[in-house]
Amino acid sequence: MARWQPGARERLVVAAVDLFTEQGYDATTVAQIAERAGVTKSTFFRHFSDKRELLVAGQDTLSTLLAEGIAEAPASASPLEAVAAGLERASSAMGPTNRELGPRIQAAVAASTELQERDALKSVGLASAMTTALLDRGVPATTAHLAGELGVLAFKQGYARWSDGDRDEADGLAHHALAALEDLRAATASLH
Amino acid sequence: MARWQPGARERLVVAAVDLFTEQGYDATTVAQIAERAGVTKSTFFRHFSDKRELLVAGQDTLSTLLAEGIAEAPASASPLEAVAAGLERASSAMGPTNRELGPRIQAAVAASTELQERDALKSVGLASAMTTALLDRGVPATTAHLAGELGVLAFKQGYARWSDGDRDEADGLAHHALAALEDLRAATASLH
Image (tube, rainbow over all chains, first blue to last red; front, side, top):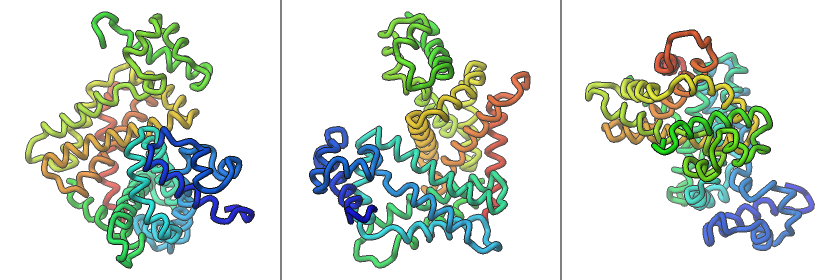
């Protein structure tokens, strides 16, 4: 967020999600989003390359946090324990606005093939960030790929439970993401 | 493939991949693809909605075959055994043209964010088809999601090994996909 425009980035995301919900993604223009957020179009383009990027805002930050958490896990941590550390680190960046916007963003994505494609590539990017961080720890390739995929599934499932659930519930995103990861780990025993 | 234009669909895919390789995805037009394939633009649009769809041609067929293989696996089959049956069924639809085009398609995808997005959504679709077929067998939700994701990873890894490998090698795609699935299954033991 640039110092000369505090809050503009978050206001743009909220305005865009509101407009996507009200009138659909295709019908919404950058000019409308900027106006709703009370900023100029050039401010919009300082934050995002196009309206599609709004809905995956924060992907780079998330990837960095996931990778950092994995890199800084104790040397004795198993691959999934390292992934859990990454999920905890990334969860710490998600606040009440993310929680509140979650279901509305999901609704906008569900209504637009273009956004589904972008969202799918975001998941690929997050998995890749985790897999690379695990490889750097010396985790064998197949295990690192598998653990990276489980990390993304856990983050998405945890995010859904957190943002769809009771808003008064005190448990943070990390709690839900780690619970989802544990569910996935337990499910590996019933595959074969 | 429509009876009145035998081979047109495959010729369009080959022409498109050639042009994407020669001059890039963005610079290639539908008119050029149709001309290279020796068909009219309207024939193109009878087969594909746009040039992007060319590179995910066959997604619906693959999804159907994966789901059928899973549905028809013996009742005693474990979730991963059912996935293996789906991979075998889907592999049977992939012939020498798919094998030969594989690396060139991957190169075109790697060079275009737009194609990466479409390719990522294709993977989501294939995983979803397998997960749904597993749920229909009574597999619990978390296990079904996990097995569907492993199925996609195995199919993609198997496809890469098959199409990147020695063309004189006799092993089919099914062999490589099932080997990749077994590698992933074995890796679940080293996650924790």
